[in-house]
Length: 102
Image (cartoon, rainbow, N blue to C red; front, side, top):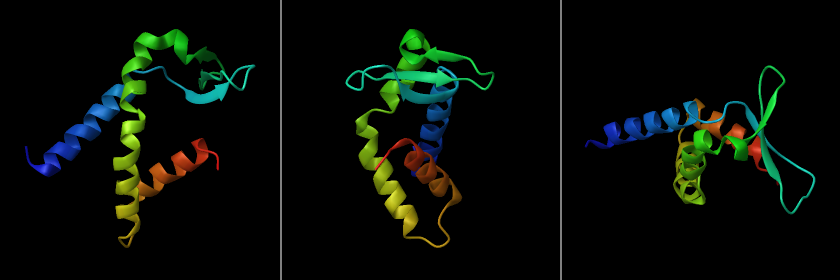
């Protein structure tokens, strides 16, 4: 497989996993800081605990494991060295900064 095709195939797999997962804006919540829950907040105002939707979300959670951090960080650093910075890299960076405090 050509590298460009490999990158496109990975992007498509990521989109498929996201599309089949629990919808909504996932946020940490719950009563105990030591055992936070992930809650999907839907556009209609409803919520759903992601753990209760495990069947729909398991593939997404596994795909977003810590194993993705190294390659994703390397891509962001690489994108930051090119002018103009790829708008997709900026969008990913902003989404991560919104989700990762500190």
